[in-house]
Length: 313
Length: 293
Image 1: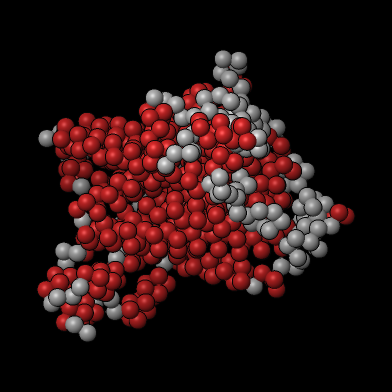
Image 2 (image 1 turned 135 degrees about the vertical axis):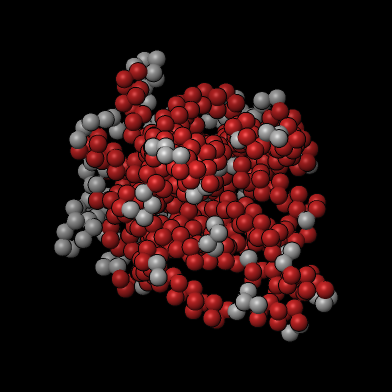
């Protein structure tokens, strides 16, 4: 197991290094003089000269990258042109809001995706299976932002049940915070639930056909015990790795969900940064999400090793 | 034709015409896939024939028709500038399908050669390409596409390039995996034994035998690319006004959700329908072409 994890760790480091090169390389895509693009509306030669000096734009590209990487390794991802705050501070400040949204969305995904996948597999080719498949496929086909707009139209505008958007800190009012999170979490969790349902169904179909499940049935165990204790427990093992994959889906979805529901999180930060041409923030968000994704994948591999007895050898 | 070529074609791996007929026959046995195919063909026809199908000019504004509810004259109502929503949905199909198909074409043209190279050559080339792929895969698809579109500048073409680059690692990884499985087959060994050059082995013997999963993945990725284009246009990074696209229509519609909900309903339904159709078709193709998956 430790050899496997060491190999995964050894692969993660060069991958992370290439991510930094890609993120830095984004800057090279800017048309014309990068100092002009980075300065926003500013055209004062003194300001442009200061930007060139700050970002080392008058030096060769590999040297610029070395300076940028050195800063990033020390947590310095540059300064936001819009707010004049360090990018790292901005990212960390928005992180709790998105983490709360992602956490609730994950709960929705687990609560819907796993039971639906189990029922679909146990009652294969039944009406329930077909219904679950249609819902699963629809969940993958409906864009987050449209589902969000439709929910606002129905639940907030027509029925007046929940607030149409905005964010209230749980420290200010826990009930308002939860009320504001219901629709965004449903929207964001819906897509992940569909993905989880399809994976759970596939894993359950595999385990339900296995010899140990046949043996459990032959022993006369209740079908519920066979399904939950024997089949589901083993089917859940590969789904652990799906948790890390779902993070990418949640972060991508959060960008749009936060825009629709006007939630001041990580996703809204990147969208606002794009419109303000605040490129350092865009780079910072991409680097942060990719690093988090690599780290969580590594954690998922560790969890997989711990819970899968065949990997402990 | 070399002996190895004959072995490949007569061995049932790349017998194109009967394979196509068999594929259609097997696909026809799957109603969901056929519904998906039918809807995709309908949308393609609508996109190609948009100037004749649409009742009005997509950009024609009218201040007397601002945000009018659906009626006999305007079946899907009008938008904030008095433009006919149905006409804009019809013309918007062009942007969405163009984005879906072209971005996947970009991803295939970058991903397949790199995957072939990584899988066939192996060693350092494989390690380098694989780490590059891992790095791209580590960036969430839409965030990478947003970042690329932001740095390239907002336009439909740049959105397609961004989506294409963001989807490339999927095809590199898939092609590499398939090549690793196929390159140890007897017919490849035979092609090598008779002295075929590497390029010929790759293009004549390996590539035709890795296309099935690529076709399946390409079909499913078109669905993802259509959603991604709509997402970028929704954020203002794709199709620019006044040219219509379903995503940009939703971007404006969200501001009038309580006064003119029809502005948001129809473009969204169009996205869901075409994406569901591509997903159904992709699932059907996977069952037929790549049953092990």
